[in-house]
Image (cartoon, rainbow, N blue to C red):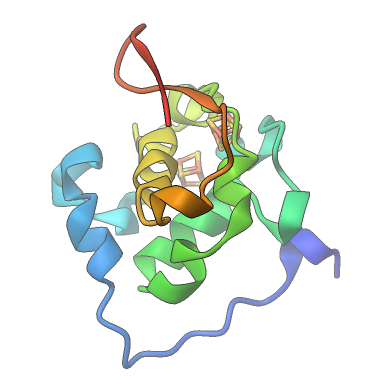
Length: 127
Ligand code: SF4
Ligand code: SF4
């Protein structure tokens, strides 16, 4: 088994507050069960494999309520926000938006400096 295929451990006691927070950027009120696990998002992602993460795995972690792992995972800063994953998703899941929101969970002083991000259009802003 490759690193990217490593098993996600599930704690059913977790509430999944993050998924509540990102409902606005996801279809059908944040129903991540829509994900077909087809892997289209991960297959062309330039950040797949970095830090043992990819867009599909990140989405599953959010759906499973693994908030602690999401909140501190450095992979969110390796995503280029190119939005390829979102464009190819057959279920129109805004994965890039999900990652954007995960970045907001980081204390501002701990965020990498100088990263330009795109969100919902051409306007850029610097964190
Ligand atoms: S492309 Fe969409 S449906 Fe397919 S695995 Fe990724 S998030 Fe799920
Ligand atoms: S937006 Fe991020 S997760 Fe999606 S394909 Fe681009 S680098 Fe990968």
